[in-house]
Length: 190
Image (cartoon, rainbow, N blue to C red; front, side, top):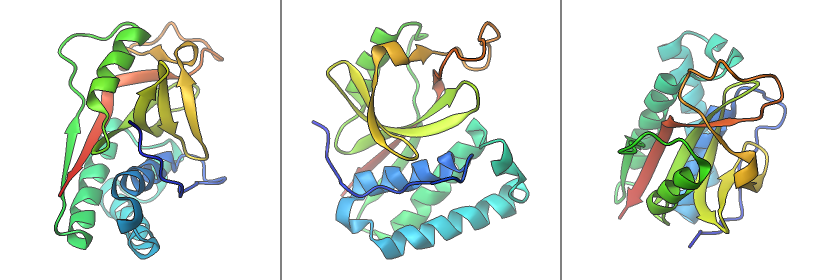
């Protein structure tokens, strides 16, 4: 079952801020009403300060956050949210499929098993640019996604499984490649 939380943070015309907005949307989805506007604004500010201090100015955002930077930023955000929500435990882990994922059907099966009301994923995509979005569940053989500006379903036909950096065969217009090894799982428990 997919939890339907109505509010969502939108990046507007800030290209390459998709990683920051994915983190905000992930915690908004997982915490619901407990993720207040005050907490969200503080976290947003803290994320930008952390990026500047740890990764060297906002130049990092010019080309988007790399997977290692995104994992570091997500862990930082989890610690910050735990300060605001001390009765909740938040874990941040890498998605580690046992076998290499080569097809969309296998990917959706694994994601369906991982994603629950307590666990979502920040998914790394590669394509015309690197991109981060929040996967909240699988429904009707489609991945439910909170993207930077919209909640949508990604049908099987839209998803291509990438092999984490070795997609030289891609051409402009090939679409987005879901990168399983760049996927971050976030879980919240009371």
